Length: 266
Figure (cartoon, one colour):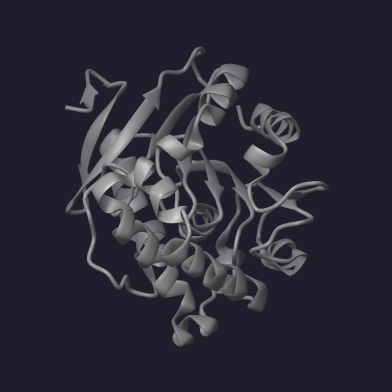
């Protein structure tokens, strides 16, 4: 069982919303600190975060939950094609069920790319009042031409290059499910109308938005939409010499910003 006497096991699998989800739990070093929940990118999983959650947890004293969504890593597979509202489903159904099951409160979500969008959807519908903030790195709130073009190039690299072999080391038997579930959704012609902007006004908790000036999957228009439409306070950090993954491209600057943000959430 993942939860024993109010304590979460260090890792294993959780049965949530009909799926078996791989997870890691980093226990808090100090009482009364927020619980950090890491939400990975569209091709991510527990392993792809590497040591970033450990570094954030060590620097803040917080506990940290890192998990692979269904179809990724060692979690249960999912049917492909995915529904075009798959991020809505994660933010509105799966994530609330996961937080309920582990009885996590005073939560700070830390999301990257698709995971950042899921964090925003959930934050805009946090009826249980669990959240005290969210860090969103390279978030998408609507579909842009640059996103579609980069994702189309990824499909070519997966079919003709070494991308599949690299991803298979992370996802194992889930590799095709993980890649095509993400890629085909974003390249579907109907996905051009995809947006999560309707959820932004419902966000009342503080946000930290981090984006690289060289992000190949999104423009600063994403950040400006969040700043203009969100119902709570928004801090923005734009990082030079940084692409789509601030925590990998600019790890020290990203860690410092996250530490400062979490310090205000106690």
